Amino acid sequence: MTAPARANQHFASPKPKPTYYGAPVGILMFERPRDSFDRPFIPGSVGNASTWSVPVRYKTMPGLNFSRILGPEVGDVAEIVARAAAELADEGAQLITSNCGFMIRYQEAVRRAVDVPVLLSSLLLGPFLERLLPRGKALGIITAKASSLSPDLVELAGLRTNSERVVVSGLEDAPAFAAAWLSCNGDLDMAAVESETVEAAVTLLETRPDIGTLLLECSELPPYSAAVQQATGIPVFDFTSMVEFFIRGLIRRPFTGIG
Image 1 (cartoon, rainbow, N blue to C red):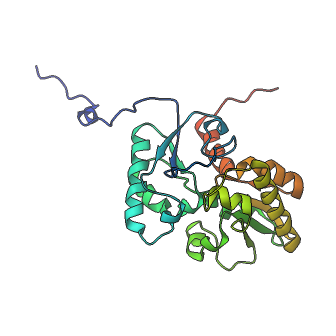
Image 2 (cartoon, rainbow, N blue to C red):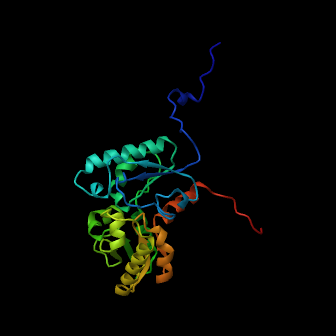
Image 3 (cartoon, rainbow, N blue to C red):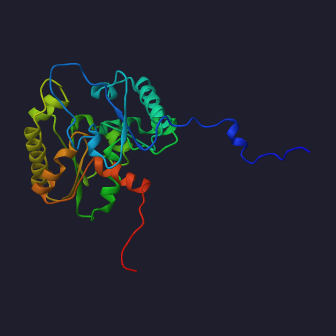
């Protein structure tokens, strides 16, 4: 008697099994320059594993840095980014993010390369936050380099260009921040960077008192979110807001209380 065909014939071409489990967040990282300066990823930074409420896994993108992802080699860079993201997904990552808000440029390339959700940039929070605000309020964005947040990147994030409801301020002229994260020619002075970030936020609100919430674009700014909120008194969002929001969807816990 012929054995009946089994319903699970899809096992004929099984999907590769993860090499390890329990680290659902995959983070794409720039290749770090080899120099003598001390620029640690401090708690709150995307690059510090203790920032997150769940274990994470990191993947360095060979040859990529801040300057190159914004350069003319879009196709070549997209291939490197997509390959690294695919490796993270194969290792078991259930979410792909990155350590730079300007990686929004490669959001669609990575979405095409993997079968898990992709949140490469904190700028993806922008449309959500802007829609929440009352008509008379604006969204303030503090970015690493305002001149690099071009209209095409703003549109890729889903925000409208030339909108009075979106106001951008950059940290490219902040000496401590620029030395540590843009020119990479100095140590990280945490107190100085915090002071510069707070000053940028306060100045932005003095210029535009209609700003109702702030979004910190750079992955190195979440350590200073609490200080910014204390100084401004308005809601402050960043990379951690975005990723932890998704984590809460991955790990649902039953409610307890009085019925």
